[in-house]
View 1 (cartoon, rainbow, N blue to C red):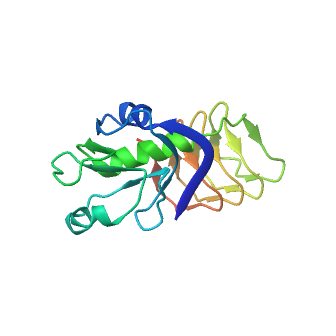
View 2 (tube, rainbow, N blue to C red):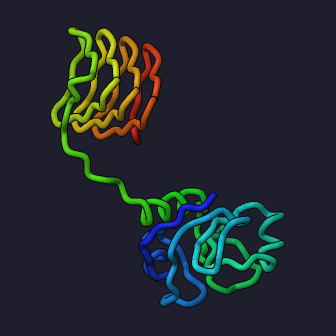
Length: 173
């Protein structure tokens, strides 16, 4: 899985943003993110499993996010307490959320008993069922179905073709 972008960020900037301890060159340019098997010399990856950490020297990658207790090769690594969380933060650096303007498509079916918050975005071919409550600044992309008695908290974003079954609460936190 490649998550390559046209953007580039220094390893020092990444380390700071993911709250890690950098061992290596803070000026090294990183151009994307990939899983360990696909990573190239200009990408950052995550290695958290003990077996893979022991084989890390076999991979040619730009940088690696590792657990804080890692004691293997010390070139362009970022030690962190929670590698998966740090990797998610790194992904967000290369793929920031797009700003979406509030809009409700004319091709949406909203039940009359549903409640919509302020500044929502609801994409076409979405249906919102009875007594659903959609919070403020919620984004629901096209083709989604929100069943009856669903609560979607403020500032939550749902991707394309999501189905939320009845009596469900959804929140990003």
